[in-house]
Image (tube, rainbow, N blue to C red):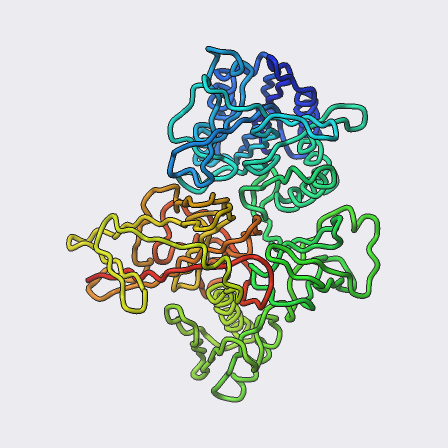
Amino acid sequence: MRTVYALFVGIDTYPDSPLTGCVNDVAAAEDWLRRQPGLQPDVLRLRNAEATRDALVAGVDRHLGSAGPGDTALLWYSGHGSERPTDDKLASTGYSQALVCHDSLTAGGQPLLQDAELGARLDGIARRGVHVVAVLDCCHSGGASSRGETARGVAWRPWWRTTPGARDLRGTAPAAAPAHVLLAACRPHESAYEGAVDGLRRGWWSHSLLHALDSLGPRSTYGRVHALAEERVRDRTHLQRPELRGPATRRFLHGEETHDSPYLLRHTARGWEVNCGGAHGLSSPGAEFTLVEPAAPTPRVVRMREVRAETSLAETVGWQPSADDLATVHPVRPSALAFPPAAVTVTGPPGDVRLVEDAVGASPMLAAGGPGLPLLVETGDGWARVSGGAGHPVAPLPLRSSADAARVADCCAHIARWHHLHDLANPDTSLSSLIRVSVDPLVGKLRRTATGEIVCSYTPDGREPQVGVRIDNLWVDELWCVLLNLTDGYAASPHLYEGAFVGPGRAGHARGGEPVWLRLPPGRAVVRGASTRDVLKVIVAENELNTEPFRLRAWSPDPQARGAAVPQEGRVVRLARPGRRDMGGPTHGVGRWGTASVVIRTEVP
């Protein structure tokens, strides 16, 4: 049984700025936790005057810090939040955020608990093998809405002591990819509201999150819980948009990977909506997704009727949704119509050709012909050789059975998925022209070729080159950016910059400004003339994107290795989080999104 070390912090009785729903929130959250099968709660409560800064810090360090490998640490905070402008260059939005403790609102009281400090403490626990989750139901600005709802924020006061160099847990990149999961009530510049729910004052976010958890059950993932709770909040107010920072396909509070599809279908005020759009490579209306339902006798399909930058609106095809269908979130998988398939040509002995063509025909990512990426499979002597991709040559694969043929088709599909992301571009370049990826040398020499490729060299004494990488926003408004590392081993990962808003005229820094280490991948000797090539690609939009489809592990002929390996070809640095992605591809005439990229070749001179 998994032990959950839980710290529930609810503060209503702030001096001069009281709230009324925070203690109710944490009481309801504790009640939910104690009802969950397979979990053993170990709870610490801090309510109202108990929730001083010292007590909160001690609760994180001592209580949550008591968790060990295999345990879960849960921080649930309901109270005020605050923000202020900052000159810290690593704060991509230009603002710093903080939690407001009970003793932070009086002159001479304790300082705020700023994001950088809290994030570092939670990540320190997570890196000991603990699954760490933070639920923050607070905001950064004061005031009440016109509907009589109370905003959970107060203005930053000049006499509040601050921590230099703080960065936003919710809106800027920390020094490394966060090791904990964050479920935040709103975006960095938004307010989180509370109001009357069933006769009690409650925070919209806490109430919606608990409702989603009860509706979806104990096997729910972070992505499904967030999708259902977010829509419930947005039904109440358009001023608050909750965020999820962390692995969407992992099980809530347990942390294990479920291998669910990263694409989710939900019913919203706008109709059926899939969290996949033009920025993921969905090319046009008419694409179809199938609900993932292992026990369903007949597959249920939805067809895209409008493709937007971040999402797509859909309609059901030949089936009538029930009330239960409307109230939940459905994992879905794309069909052959969703993304352009690679065109596979197979040569060799007729028996081998037939074996591979049958396997190719079973994959929605592959076709026997057409305008897609041309891939060649040469067969003979019990082997198959796949070529045509832009990455490092793929080792020959055995071909003696239908299972071997399926692995060959899997290799082709893997290369096709990588190329969809590699080639992703919006013909509307209005946003692409306003973003730039910059690479600065730190260790080793750097030069640029006539084609624009950046070449980084090992030092004469064999040290790996290091660079600083940043994303510059040249627009007059903030943009949401994610930076992908596509390696020549056919891996893709957003771990260098997992996704955040970058303010106008500001920059988002890969790894929070720490060096990005460039190195040859495992298996390639560091000898004169050896090299590897990576693409650093930023995808930019006006709103958050579902980043799970951007994760693809390096190709391996071993299915178990593909399911477990961290993408580390090329210059993936030490703190990469394991991930996976399904598909992406070029689009035509949709939405406000764009891309910019640089190619880096790491070489041994």
